[in-house]
Length: 251
Image (cartoon, rainbow, N blue to C red; front, side, top):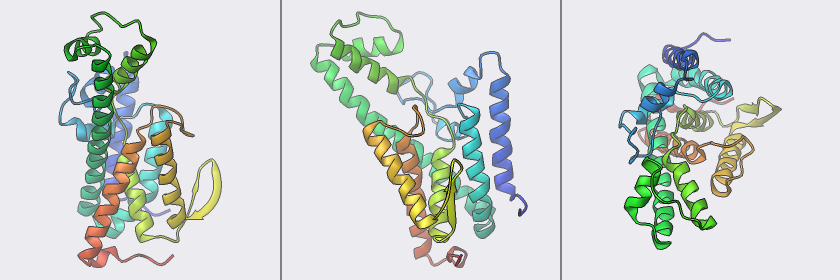
């Protein structure tokens, strides 16, 4: 195995340190989540720095394991080919782009749900009070209750994890090494990257649209797709500039 590259090593260490720090706290890292996860823009906990800090927080051992496994597997290859500076620029642009795209999707869904509640007779101020404090009269209509619950899920569920940036790395790897063989850890069947990565993205799109996920709940599928889209756009931009470091390897 080739030696770890510097940026990947630092990112790996930071993610692990943050995860362990949260796990060792009595409240399970609640303070880190409140400060560093990406909250809905109108939430009291929201801060612009969260567009970056959310990438260093993970919700479970499995979450951080799969993200860090992918970071090491693909990141060190890309960092060797691009250099550390370009790799870090790419990584953080994909991560921030993923956050912005997921936030935009959430904003659109939130606005639609809020409009339905207003049409059902709730005022925007009453909706805001219910979301922020839990105070106010809760409607008896089951459909309105269900809409409120869905709205609250968007408002009070912060985004965390490096997956958006990781999906950008996946796309870049597939762009440069289309014939490299990849496989899922739990389905060890090698498939060329040029088929594997689009298939994974289609699965995310299906899950994001339908709400049905093979990988469990509470997954920001549009953040995955957003990171992939930013990664693809950057690769096209860099290819147009004809950088010699972006010549695809023949594997």
